[in-house]
Every structure is written in structure tokens, then in C-alpha cells.
Length: 418
Ligand code: FES
Ligand SMILES: [Fe+2]
Image 1: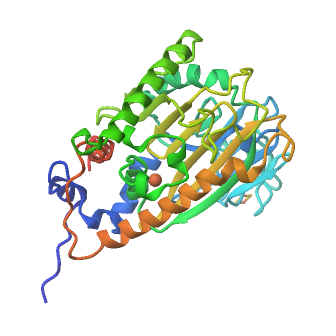
Image 2 (image 1 turned 30 degrees about the horizontal axis):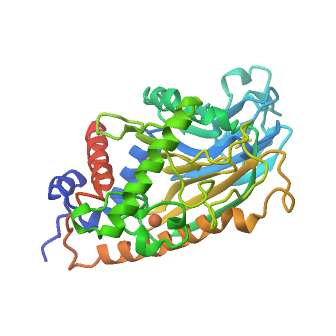
């Protein structure tokens, strides 16, 4: 019997027809999944949390990513640090995934004990020649931008996180995002490969039919519809929307609120991101069912409710910041066909549930949207595994960012020798 020769990931990518999707094999093979995790989640900067996950000294949040695990901790000086979740004795995991509060980090196996700065401060029975100073926890590169906690497990992390920081820090600054609390968080394990989760996030082709709640706050036509195929009425609505957007942007820019799009999405960048401030439809305030703020206590010091939606994408996250709340989702690949999507809704640290905000009103748009996206990703993943699947063309109007994501994926693999 002859052995079936599997194509390499490089061969599969090169077999992709320009402007079309990737072959189904890249979403299911475990060897490709391992390469993806190694390249895109261990060698690039990824979002793994927000500052409000660990608000006080001693607060710990542990995030598992593939075989690696990271401890995020707020130290005694209120700095956020990250360490490999591996004991320097015989390698036991120090903490399980999730959040907790500690005085020190104590290994459950033989009780080696680490300070919150990672230094080994206590061991028993190691003898007088044992030098604890060279057994500190291994630090992980960390970068906090706004409230977003990015980490990179590479020895030499990509330097272009600096561009993201320089772009996003002034855009997030008016919202004082570190002075927030988590009003709600949710996890979904989607039945799809992480790349399909991100591809789905990069287009709004599916929004008009798939997201009745989300499309209350924007005009689907604005996301790259082909104007040749639009009705007179839709064209008029789009024109009105653009006029309103332009007027709003002029007003925001005058107040120093940055609006213009910034895109770092090409294959030459390691840390890909996109940002823009977009107008919100309807009452123009927030991504809620009535487009009004869901939290009466606004973020930062602004009294304006109509600050639009400052969004940010990275290759494992999407964020929307409005005057009253921020919604931040990030993904962690679990297996070739399972992806964790973790979402946090942030409000002002002093906002009081039941007085300033109602959790249902705050979360209902994205709870519904995430569930709808999970269903869409699942049917995409299942169908793409069918032997009859031949990747079709992306829309040149409304799927350009998907095409760009796949190009970036291919370029980054090449940059890492795949
Ligand atoms: S493995 Fe941690 S103390 Fe032994
Ligand atoms: Fe969606």
C-alpha cells in the first residue's frame, strides 16, 4: 500500500489561488496547528488580558497558550509583570489557569517560594551552597498599552510593538482605561480553527444577515459594499452616513480626539494592527440596542457621550472603546478545531451595577454577536473540511482585510522559515 504524502504548510500556502481562501487542510492538521501556535502565539506579541484582571498587588491571572503558560501578576509596586508558569526546581506548574490572589507564589510541589517580582525567596533542604539568585522565575516580555496587556514569549520580541503603542496610547488616553473595572466577562469555545475565527472578524460581509443587534450601531453598507449593486435608497443612506461621519470626525479632531485610520497589516510587519474612530449610527453613543450609553458614568473625564467607536484589531484580538464602556475580545487557540474567545466589558472603576449600568444592556449586543459568530465559524470550519471544498474568491469590496490577513499569515510563516 502506498503512503499518502502530506503537503507541507509552505506548499499548501503556495497552492492558494490569489484572492481565494486557504485550503481546508490548514485548518485541521495538528502539525500545522503546532506551527501556528509556535509562530503566531509564541513568537509574536499577543493580547492576554487587561489591567483590571489584576487590579491589586498580589492579584494573579494565569493564561495557558499551547504548551506554554504565563503568570500575570501585579507586584507590590503595582507594576504588571509576567513570568513563565514553571517552577525553577523541577518544573511544576505554579498556578492553574484563572485568577487568584497570593502573598507570594508558592510551588505546590516542594514549596519553593517566589516573591511577586519573580525572585526565589525561600527554599528548604537545598544546602548552604545553593544560590537562589539564579533561580528566579523566567520573565516574559510584557507591554501594557491603555488597559491591554500584551506579552511575547520570544527571547527577542518584535520591536514593532512600539508602533502599536505610539499609535494607540494617545487614542486610548482620553478614556483612562486603567481606571476601569470588569463589569462582565464571558468565554466561548468556538468550534473552528483560530484562523477562521480571525478571518470572520475581518469582514462584515456577513453582518447584514448575521448580526441584527450589532448592525443597529453602524451601517453595513459602510463596510465595503459594491455601490453598483446598491439601491438608490441605500446609496442615499450611505451618503448621509459619510456626511455625518465627516462632520463628527472634524469635531473630534478639533478636541484632539484622533480619528484617522492607521493600518499596519502588511506582511512586513510582525505586530499587525488596525485602528480608526468610527461614528455610531442612531443616537450615536454606544454599541447597545438603542445606541445610547449603557453606563451613565462615562470613561475618563469626558462628558461627551458621542465619542464614536475607537476600534483596534490585532492578530488575536478586537477592541471597541466608546464613551461609556470598552469591549475587548481576544482568542487563544486550543486545538486545530477549537478556539477560546474571551470577552471583557470594562466600565469606569467607580461605576455601580444597578445604579450606573445594567449588565444585560451593557453586554447584549456583543453576547449575541459572539454567539452568532461562533455559529458562522463552526459551519465554515465544518464545510472547509469537506473533501468537496474548493476555496472560492473573496469579495474585492468587503473581504479585502481577510485576504490581507491570509497574506500576512503566509508572510509571517515565511519570515520564520516555514
Ligand atoms: S517543582 Fe516546584 S518546588 Fe519542586
Ligand atoms: Fe461577525
